Image (tube, rainbow, N blue to C red; front, side):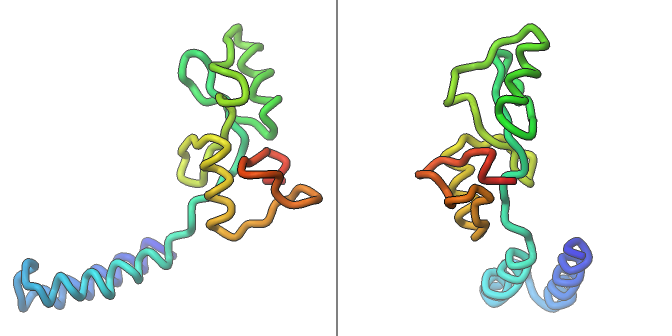
Length: 130
């Protein structure tokens, strides 16, 4: 489990640091070269998990497809913020991203499109997720 691994790495660092100052250049070098990369390689990359649309009130509404989000927003008597540009995604870190950043996240994580012909341009569509 990731939390256990981080605790183990930090425990090793604490044991190592008991004999030296944390500002010691050797300690800082070890942190930069060993500890940080170990932790980062075990953290899953951020990916898009569902469609989302921003309403005029600034809230992000989630759904399977962007149309589902729009129906929810309209059903609550609200309006969407601004057409295509108010449509994006919620990530695995519970962050809203637009279609452009969503595309970059999926590509950086080497996740292929679920769409029959791969990604369509430099933007992400909910059909690319599932």
